[in-house]
Length: 361
Image 1 (cartoon, one colour):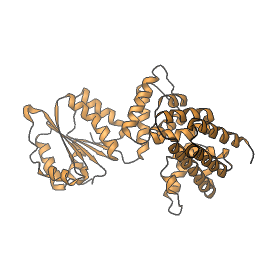
Image 2: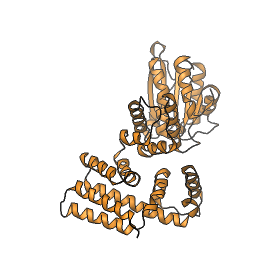
Image 3: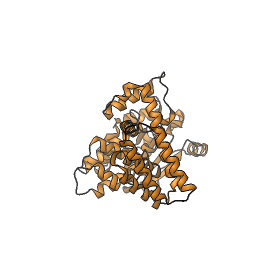
Image 4: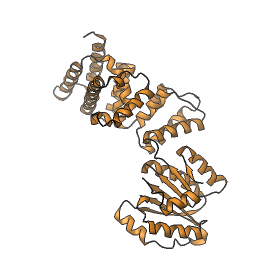
């Protein structure tokens, strides 16, 4: 079992569960959070087969000191398999790696190592042994969000469901990069669409509960794509969740400010502005990011490209950012100074903005 891609982890789980083929070393290389979660999927199988876990975090001094003191990798009582779960495995000294490999060669049926590493030298004893006798799972060839997209595709296929590219991008942009949250929301989506083969954007909007920041993003997105009524309904939901009105206004200000900055950036980079398909837009965006001569505002770099792509489409409706900021200021004043009902103020705000878009400036 040499090198595997993330999509082949299902095969490793199946080998461990059904054929009892358990590797002495599973070396995961890539972003720690995703590697940890995927490693645990295999480890859960070993837990069912009765095993004992020792965990060490070599990214902290105390973890390194404790790890370097363990020797011999003694057999567990009654022959129970011992699992070593190591974070920051790139910090394992070569000498320690040789010691571990020697022990594995002597008793590779009672030990399993799960090594989580950002990187690992190919001449490291543990890398070489994993390549020969274990499994190396590489998460380093793609961006983190691409792993979640792969995971989404696999899970949908498992449950015989589909969604189009725009729906998938909407889902991914709402759940963010947190794997736990992604996994939980995806499970909920699949459960609530049990009788549907095709998942739509409406399903996403009805079922997914984004984090607070993503919910606020969704507010602006709903306004542009579905009109003032749906944006107003979500605002009432946010207020019911005890999210304060000034915070919602503050986010809307940041959203429109980001739009204004994007507009200026697109004017300087018309080749990006003309891309009408997300795949082409994303490709051109990555090229611009890699160009040392192109200065990209940090606020744009920190934003998911699908969000920027949506903003680009929304810009066609906005002719006058000054008017938007005046409406935001008026709403803020009404809530903070005049103590008017926030729900009513937001209703008026969205309607005023929507009607202003219909006018010709």
